[in-house]
Amino acid sequence: MSSVVLKRHSVLPGFGLTVGYTLLYLSLIVLLPLSTLAFKSSSLGFDAFWTTVSSARVVASYKLTFGASLAAATINAFFGLIVAWVLARYTFPGRRLVDAIVDLPFALPTAVAGIALTTLYSENGWLGAPLARMGVKVAFTPLGITLALTFIGLPFVVRTLQPVIDELDPELEEAAASLGASRAQTLFRVVLPALLPAWLTGFALAFARCLGEYGSVVFIAGNMPMRTEITPLLIITKLEQYDYPGATAIAVVMLVASFVLLLGINLLQSWSGRRLAA
Amino acid sequence: MKRRVLTEPKPVRVALILVSLAFLAVSLVLPLALVFVEAFSKGAAAYAAAIREPMALSALRLTLLTAAIAVPANLVFGLAASWAIAKFDFWGKNALITLIDLPFAVSPVISGMIFILLFGRLGTFGPFLQGHDIKIVFAIPGIVLATVFVTFPFVARELIPVMQASGSEEEEAARVLGASGWQLFWRVTLPNVKWGLLYGVILCNARAMGEFGAVSVVSGHIRGKTNTLPLHVEILYNEYQFQAAFAAASLLAFLALVTLLAKSFIEWQTGRRASAGSVENEA
Image 1 (cartoon, one colour):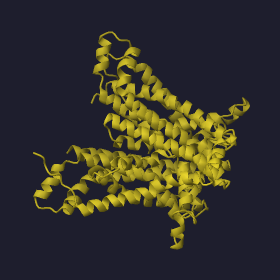
Image 2 (cartoon, rainbow over the protein chains, first blue to last red; image 1 turned 60 degrees about the vertical axis):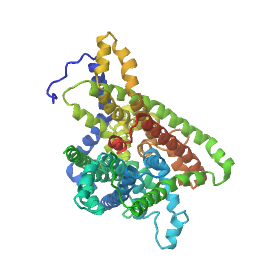
Image 3 (cartoon, rainbow over the protein chains, first blue to last red; image 1 turned 90 degrees about the vertical axis):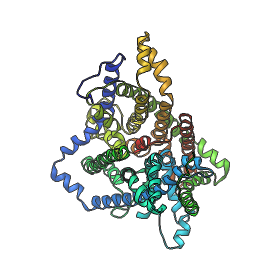
Image 4 (tube, rainbow over the protein chains, first blue to last red; image 1 turned 135 degrees about the vertical axis):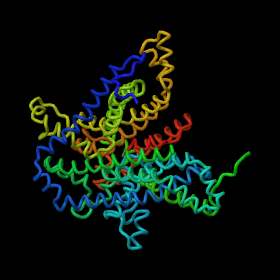
């Protein structure tokens, strides 16, 4: 609109003070510290950078982190859609309580989630023991990592879909029904396509969160190099060995991945906004 | 005329509700219940002993201190940023909003790491700090800085849309009637955005007290000195003191429950549901 104008004329005071303080605080707390990362990695040189990020142990951690995050986000997309639909459309006793519980992974500190999930799925845990009898080992395997990430990612899918389901125009469904579509046809041909952008956004948000997750995963992961070592842990290991350049190189790759995801999410959301407005 | 709302056949509805409840029970409620069961697995006396232990108390104190600095700092920032963004048009506003969200896109481990790169022994300011005998990382200032970084967007992100929605007409009227800047802020703006503000503060506080990854990187794990409650939980757990670890964890789980309760209360007060906007809060 008028973004070319430096500042719209306003009778309200405080523009200089608040913009000035916002920029100063943002620069000191966020921009300056983050720029150190770019600065340190550029001083590394391309060869050293490439040697670090393409070493076998680092690549194994990327594969594990991306693979488990993808699997967890997929599980969340499936169950998240059902949970969001149930919460938005159906009434049943305790619905408000269930609705509040969905946010638990946002509110529960990750370290607490981490030790609780590890104990739950350990070989003599509430769920780990029956699973072990069936020959499924969860704790200290990639499966355990995936389950921990599923815990962390769930609210993203539910909370992105819920308001969109609320705002779906019921006339669309009525029109489909009056034209002779069965309920299943209406759901799969009319409702689901309308939810697709929000569904993908929720999936991508959950995936992005899982990529960087540390606290809830590190306890259940087992942390064996090449097998169950996630990338954030590898960064910490390098830092503890005072290998700052190595840690920086790995971190830059992770950061670029999350920024690319963030960009994708923004594009998805503008697509979603257009779909809703149409 | 009341229209019949279209819905699925009853067996499908019941099945979907049951699938949802079962999934949430296994993936969310079970881990939460386990924290309290394990915490009291050796009785109330052992629970009380684990919580009153000096290390636990000093970790609790550091957690409270960290939140007491990080939350007000980001609260003041959130008010300034949302005032500037909601009440004025200026060049680069959308870029500014994106930059405010930046810490949500950064892994907690990387959030801690950037402060090591700045203030660590081999960091940018390392030699200077050592020369003047100032400790930032592996000390309390580092923990506070990392916490301020990871909780940076919470208040601003909640306040910006609320302040935009409440518009500027009331403030402009107050201004025309002769109110000073502070008067219109305290008497007009603040009452209008109080629930949004509280919502942001509650989420900010929960993250500040519960942050683990970033704080773990900068803390140096010095017992009784640089341990926050989540780090204390980690140490006890790694030392196989499971009951004590879960006792300390139960305090944090209780905080999470209070947070959810307060969040639901505000949503009920304002008639809003957790919106898509608040989802990316924690992204």
